[in-house]
Length: 172
Length: 172
DNA sequence: GGAAAACATTTTAGGCTTAAAACAATTTGG
DNA sequence: CCAAATTGTTTTAAGCCTAAAATGTTTTCC
Image (tube, rainbow over all chains, first blue to last red):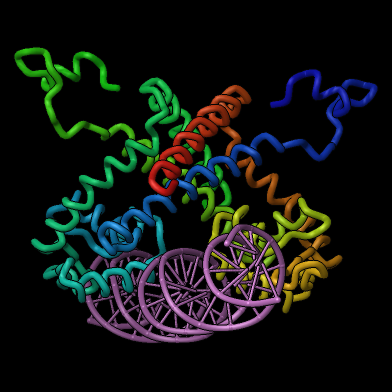
């Protein structure tokens, strides 16, 4: 919604809206900044996980999901939560089962479904990594005041809702 | 900086700070929300680029960088700007040169350096895609008021600075 | 001038990621 | 009941991505 002063060239002599390519440069800049922040932090976390624990970020993320679900999750659940494709989860899980971090079994009641859980080893290692991970995040956001954090949370919630609505418009 | 009421358990009987694992749950939640927003929007843009133009997001991003640099860029420049590894750029450029979107030549003055530019075709296609891309972004952020956008820009700038400082602390 | 350091890029090996197709099991609706 | 639709997962093909090592080039500085 541009300020009135920005609209002068978009109104014809009869004060009627004219079809003009609208200017969305601000939103574009916002998106690029959002992306930069995420890429920056993600890269930093990725590097620290590798250096300190020799683990990849996707593996850590998957274990984080499972740590919150003591009764296990299906691959579909994981895929939705992590917002990645099904095939991606299949490979990720396979590697984590091989390394002894995950337990996978076919559901008794529905033979299509695979339920995965953290093993004892997986849970222990994840907890160790997560504790340190939390301090990295705190440090990365250290210059934000509690008020900044609250305000960002609020605005990002609004952003998420807006984007979800837009996505739903395209794919109803 | 927790509120005073949150600190009660962190002070011992002599009102001295005690070594307690600090609570950074808020920052962690903020990071997850930031990541969710980015992943959501990025996935949406990726899908639309593929459907409408049969182009990948990394290719689009690379062309976007070059569109802003009519005199071309070196691979290092691109790598820094896109915040991806050098080897990644090598492959990306190779595919875009093959498809006729990029021109690549060795610098006259420094034979280590490769300078890449958009070809006429590359520029034309990018401009066509970028125009539509901008409307997608506007739509994805449509529910944010201009004030929201300004405030988010400000807070993300602060976030970026904080994260860069934190990264620099680790890797001086 | 020449060895050593720094720089730009490519190569390598391995893992991540996606979209789409294929497969298997369950549910639905005549 | 049973064919059709749906659901959960895996496979496939291609591309993306990283870290680290290797290669070639230029600069630095004795």
